[in-house]
Length: 445
Ligand SMILES: C[S@@+](CC[C@H](N)C(=O)[O-])C[C@H]1O[C@@H](n2cnc3c(N)ncnc32)[C@H](O)[C@@H]1O
Image (cartoon, rainbow, N blue to C red; front, side):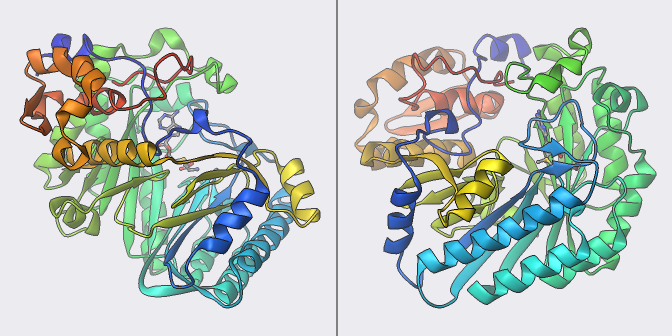
């Protein structure tokens, strides 16, 4: 790999978990419009749900998620009361009768801060309004530190089929620098707790680009967690955005690896995982060959949503909880970010919507192209009127073609193996919102 050649083309671009991306959402999409969109959905359309639990009991200094630290159980329990109200309101807006559910994801924050009785209450309300398909996947993000067996068992009772554990890095020096102490034994114990509760599928999150991380350290973390035999791994590049996440100022910037070191870390960890038999999927995922994600990737049936890569093909994803984002055929919608205003909206009987964006036919075309690139590293522009239709994108991509990172043959645009770390940069060439938007993203590598 020629790092210099790649880095020449790297620049700050979105991660494309949606298109248009979240900075382009606006308050023109409000509770009234969202209600109208929900009312138009056909009764039998399969739905996916995302539920956001925005609480943690400690602050990880690298954290880029929408969360707040709480010191007692009380705010979590009263948040659950609000979630139940939102589930009822959403269901009433969808109309009479239970709806089919294909996928449910609990994210955070740390959903494991919920008490077992809170999880049971959520299950009781959910299953009154939504009927999961027999092959529905129900996933939950878990913090391995202080993971309580009765909480995991409550999630298993709810029907959880997959858990993802945040590992990040196992070196004490890195863990101190990110304020997240979790020796390997803690992760191994958490994996055992999850499996013995009957949750069969295990994902692990790893990170590179953290302070004091070295290539050797990233590889030894990967080797250690492979002994736990996870079904999937995510390998996220640390996104350092202290202008948006003020607590990231606690990260010692002088200890952050430079772009070349980041690239080497990512590739070294990827080699370790691939040599251990995992399939490389998209930008940052790895899965066992018999995992549905690897099977979907092989069939060209991979999708991308706010949780990253998914096999979920439900056309509608509805978000519940503060800041949660939903995807509908008509556009995106995001909930209010703060608990007080979320509570106020629900008390007034209103869907707690903050903003969103309606998608035009051009947006949907560009979203398809970006999604194909992010999932499959190739797109046939013939399906979108031909390469001649994309003059600006072609001129933005010409330097990558000249450097042998990308191939455009007739209408077939292919990101070559050497160019894959630049997939976000290639996708950005089709992003009509990016030019002159003034939004600051993290670097592509
Ligand atoms: C939504 S977080 C939930 C993690 C869970 N609460 C825990 O403590 O394990 C999911 C994952 O996002 C990743 N992540 C968080 N902040 C990030 C950042 N600034 N850059 C890249 N990845 C990040 C981490 O790998 C983390 O495990």
